[in-house]
Length: 218
Image (cartoon, rainbow, N blue to C red):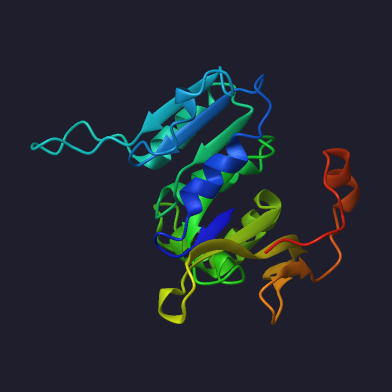
């Protein structure tokens, strides 16, 4: 789950991560407005289905919601489901999709910190058609989300700097005990670097896919 404020660069980061997905995987994207454009790169993603939400006509007919599109995507044998941005009813359907064998699925959400994401998701789930209680949504999050990546946009023009969009926090979901348990595995230091902050529970699994547990960025 990629989190950040408006115009922080969430969709750009989502696209960059998606471009690292092996080309043999079948991807289904669900968006309110087509932005990702993964189907525009057939050399990287030869098997992509792009869904876009359809609003009702002037008579209130013909709407196809994000939640319905996510449900339809699950019947199309996807390797991963990528939801451009979750804002409401689709959250419960998306979390169910992510916890039912579609490992590596991706999405973005508005939040002010990596730790705020879990409460934001629970709020959306409580307001959704399913009216999912907070405790139930927290259990669903713990089974569906592995990492939250928080990206920030910083304008330092006034101090002689530049506009930056940077990942400042990575949080791993560790389980649930009434609330989601998590640890911030990468965090920003006082000098602006982002470094390892806590042990990663699934380190061996990440290393099997090429992760190197040393170094910094920023």
